[in-house]
Length: 620
Image (cartoon, rainbow, N blue to C red; front, top):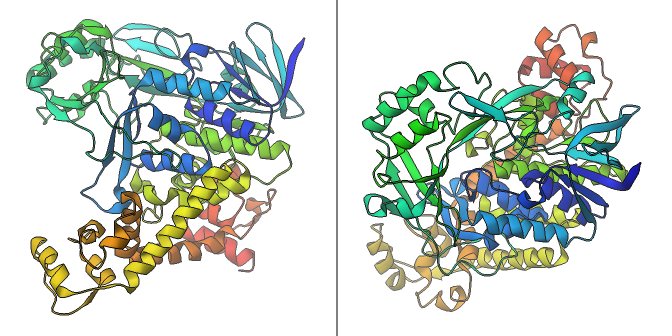
């Protein structure tokens, strides 16, 4: 029996699934969101935080396009910090500590308030496929739902296995069962699958910790916001704390190595390189006598603490014994032990740039199923998959972001063209245009696109236009205004930079690394104009002035490379016919089937000489 027909079915209600459902529904599709547990929608399975280095840029981009992650992060935040302030503006990255229960509830509320989204609680264990096109899903209870497109966002649930010491059992996360059936079906259809591993630390009772033995890590004095629609920064914040492991902790942890699934061969898959377990850290970095442990509250009204930096799958008794040797944790009681989890993923080279599978029409993958790790990476893929699932069935061209437009573009381009053998995490170093892709200008880059799609609201677009107008006026004012020496010299002296003996252009003074726009707030010449402007607006203008040369250079580079992205390759092009191409290039090009010369040039194993051959063949 068919129980319903929809435009888009989204399988899984994690960060990717929620953004996918919201995007497709906002664009006008009728959406069914199927989840195994409606009490765990957008659950923060690991750390209770959003953003961070490069990840914060992604949240801003999701928000600029019209997604929900930024708004919900702001509304559930208990702390805000702008990371990397001591570095260049391209590295600044916003991060919130969040109340994980409020975060999940807000996401559920937003899903329920969208009239185009329906929900159903069950496991999807079969895709209904006709003529290489997905047309619906079947659930474990035998319910059949039809749809024009399906987005799979399975997270860590597909054939998930949890490890604690030598104990192992099925599960998508602690206390929740794994999902089955989909991997086996897709493999039978010719898909390649693999296994990945991630982990999580113990949760402890904050009432049993001694914070006097730790370093306090407070939020910013002037907290910011992720969303361009949010208006109210935090008035009060909860502090995190930092403590450290020590040689005694490491000795106890080593006692459990024989029972560690990482070291005794039980776990065969690869975990995230940049978020290793504590046992992996002390094994790989044996010369270090301590490692940081971040003590992070899980919310406003809970005593539960997330022990960031102590991810582990060692036996529970070893976890407790070692933890109690960490300063401040001498009397710690745990709510639940840390564990590792292995799960199925599908190498993302099997997808097109719109996140649709190449083998099955109208079937989209987003999130950890594609080999990524992190809420932010998952949410951004979910948004893009939801947009493209809607656009595919409404006969619109795919929505694809380039590497020079967004970190989201970098992420998806890397996955499709390079694949990944380990959980992929976004870093600023992965983006060659990171001066263009700053966290402060995500709305300038993307809100127009989101509004054109129909995803960003008119209110959001109007705010963006107002801000752009004010920014243009401020940068113009900085360009044209001159400051008398008697006003500016006291500031220059205080900042240990050379004084001036005549009127000096505001922009020239601002080009000095020691000088900021805020230094001009109280000067007679500039006080009246600058006094009514927001800190964020003044900061962005300062960045545009200070980094103008670098920004223009990157823009020029992006424009030069854009010509390659306009050179289209036919989908059925026969690469084997070009005898001059290297064997590896033929294999990779035939597998990935790039749509442009630009995409071909970014495929791992395709050399510059291979691109030259293609250019000669196409008469360029």
